[in-house]
Length: 187
Image (tube, rainbow, N blue to C red; front, side, top):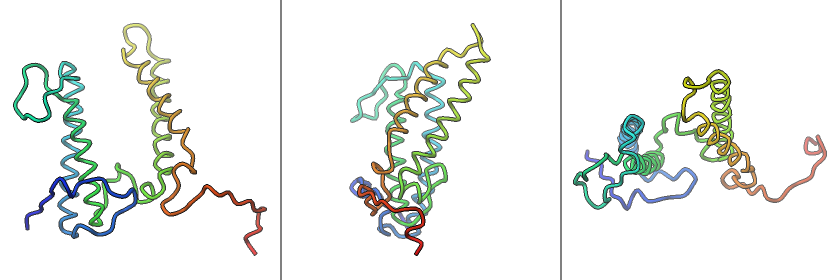
């Protein structure tokens, strides 16, 4: 059975897990497409890292004809991110589980869980970069090390600025604080 995914079906939906709009077999095929899209995105990212001449070169988005000069790796990555998000949304709407690296159902329902996971990863990365910084000197020091550390610190500051009240679980309003004594609700 052919699966048709028109651009209009891939528009932004609710932040919560959508209802079963896509049948289960179509959701499975969309999940397989998502896996391939994520692989393609990582291949493009690797190509950009290896070919900085293609960095920032943007071909017109209305044309698929090659433009003289560098390959537009960065634009392709942006397109890949957009398509991966749309495929993930569609797969979830059919009940397909996303790859573990795209988060959990809990993380999607309670965004602060994802923020906590990101804080853990950026903290670990900053620790590793700090160790590398202390061990490397002169020509052995990677040229982008300070920038990577600064970016990690900036992201951590931004992530820590988000509070549970700003990212409440779906359907739960946490803005009204309740003051109870310990054990008061136990009966």
